[in-house]
Picture 1 (tube, rainbow, N blue to C red):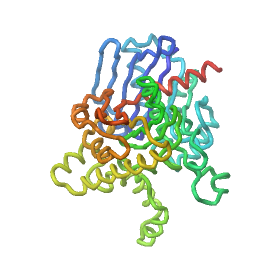
Picture 2: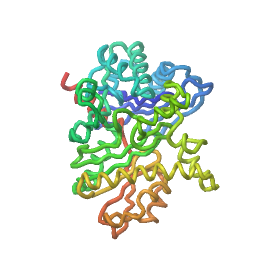
Picture 3: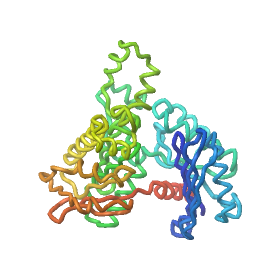
Picture 4: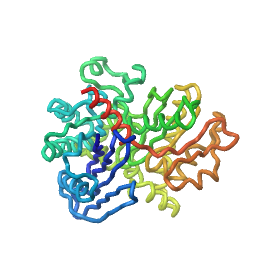
Length: 396
């Protein structure tokens, strides 16, 4: 049973081909980046034989990138033909009332379209990719695994906004929570490492960031709200923001379309720094005394610490704090800043271990005197999507 697991961004396409009948064996993986730009980057790998290829190409659309990689799977002798792809799973983002793993049909696409206004950077690429795969592989079933599903266990009192209840009940305006595949994998993995790690706070920090409280591998709180523009400041998306500030912006002569565009594309770390939303650029510039670059990092760190503090209360203490995502796994400085001065909660980072953890693999970071374990856990979202897709296929 070969599952192709697709992970889409507004300008990217990543995938893993997993044989579920052979112990979740990773057959191949690849990516196409900078889709729609003058020059695109592609990568293709077969981990079992340590084979890796990369290069530049022009992908004007996601469909072209998908077609290119499907051909690589055959030319690279991973598959004898595309008929060996049994199903396609998607790490879908926002389906509103749809929860969990569902077979993609016209109704699912319609609902995703309805919620594109609150997930403008995510839903449109997924809708386009689903239609592209349908035209290229019309007989192959597609499964959408929505990121919100993992957070259905969050108590209702932490999902509801203080708004007229009809808006919640009839329009579905509430806290949904996202990054479900990542947070669920980290909870699963930490339990495998130590079955006593039941109360976990995971910090998924990257281009998109969130903090999640897990109790016995179940989500009980998440920093996201109704949309992926909320919570922790992201690379170029705003994070938490006072809705009434929009009145001030409108009075300043800024039209609504511009406000939404800037909040979702030109805010976050990019908006504060004015130079970049990439933590690597900001770290370098901060070290060269760029005050706004340093301020962007400080705001990110302060927001993460705010949620950690809140979730210590939610969980009544914590067994482990973990880091995943590009920033969480790779930024020595950000991890150190987040975890400093938390001795009151039994949290003590080993500075030497943190400094050495630079190879993007699992590491424990806690000091011997720390009563809370501290971990880097590289996430595996595709594996969690594959497992849920596999379960759905078996039911059908």
